Length: 254
Ligand SMILES: [Zn+2]
Image (cartoon, rainbow, N blue to C red; front, side, top):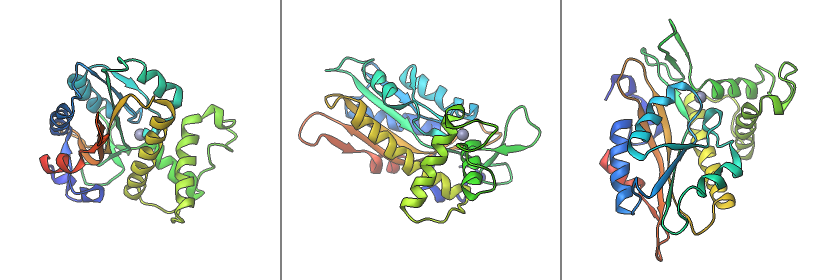
């Protein structure tokens, strides 16, 4: 484990490399008959190129991935995209795997919310969309729905959804608007999971079997791998139990 991640317990009891995550998740899913040959995978990871390395590892394991993503990892592609995804496997035999979660960078000197990108001389924000939403919610910058330079929500739709989703969650839970980036990232993990589950109920037929793996994706510099803190892992199965929780098994294997 990198020394950079010493305080990664912010995000849960276990943090693993993406390589190990992909291998262990694949093993657990295979026991529930989710196999690369019958399972189509979708991702909602933020559009940031930092996440491409993780997506490439998922593609190597599961094949081409349906992109449900929006900025900050919000599934802003919406119900039409979830429905289309569900129609791309055999209804009776096919399985669906949805991988989600916010991402956060950590710089070489251990600062959360920043990371040095390959073509830049110094660190920049990650997730930039979430950092921007925090400033918009704190009133340091105008919200995307009213910023004249953007012209309204429709011209900056995904950032508006990030801002509004975070704002609504803070209001609903009576939380302070002055969140740290690590607190906001953990909150976004909950928000994204709730939205993914809602899209699953609304847009994917009940008879489809769906597995969901979610958590925080951690981008680090100068390493050959990124990291993941699991928060959610379940698989719908045939039979009375209907849905099995795989999170404890995953955590104990990482
Ligand atoms: Zn991002």
